[in-house]
Structures are given as C-alpha cells and as structure tokens.
Amino acid sequence: MKRILTLGAIGLIAFFESCGTAKSGPAIDILTDTNWQLTTINGKAADSTNYNSGFPVATFSTDNKIMGNGGCNRYSGSYNINDEGGINISQMASTKMFCPGNGESDYLKALESADGASVEKDKLVLLKGIEEVLVFKPKK
Image (tube, rainbow, N blue to C red; front, side, top):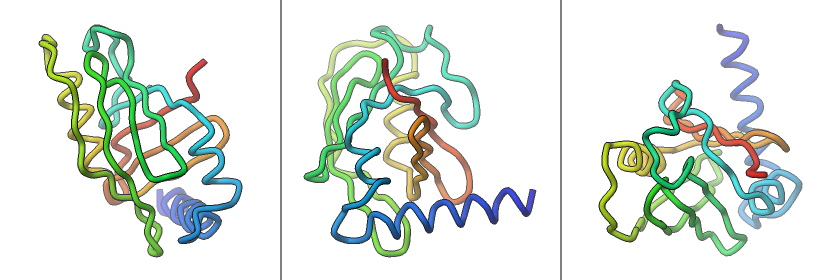
C-alpha cells in the first residue's frame, strides 16, 4: 500500500510539474483535449440508474472552465491548478431540472471536493487527499 501511495504522489507531482502555472505540456493537453465520462464515484463503480441522461461528463477548457452534464442537468464552473500539485473546482452552477435520486447531487459534491488530480491518456482521477473521489475515462 505504501508503495502505491508513493507512486501516486510521484504521478501527481509529475502531472502538476508538467502543467506548471503556465498550464502547458502533455498532461494539461490530455486534460483539456478530452471529454471525460464518469466511471467511479467515491470508490464505487458509477451506477447508470442514478443518472437520467447517462453517466456524468466533464470537459476542462484551456481558459480554466469546467463544464458538462451531471447525469441530468448541465453544469459549469471554474478550475485552477496550483503550484503545490492541487486542483480547485469552484463557482459551480447548474440548470435545475427535477432529477430523481441523489446521483447528480453526489457527483457535483464530489467534483467540488476534489483537491488533487492525476491524468493519463485513458484515465482522469480526482482526489480528496489520497482518496479517489471521481474516476473518468475518455468519452467515446
């Protein structure tokens, strides 16, 4: 377990060092050039029955905006990557159509709670401390 955490920390450092404050490099390009679809939330596989319009999707723009569909409503907000290797997602807003269940609400809460990230060509992980809160794959 300790080795996995160490490798994860190295991955996070490499991701954010490649991003830097100028937000350039391969990792940020993967983040912003991909539409991400949710696969895991709070350590459990995402259940399609919790989302009326399919699994939530997130898109990160090069001008620090995040937008997508939470499984029912459209949402948008801002994100920042900091020098310490963290991510902050804030100023979230969404449409307000009725959506049964808590799937979308749980997703948006997890999204706003993220304070770290790891990105690869086929996987985006948003973390709260060392815990994975959301895992995405590229949407096809």
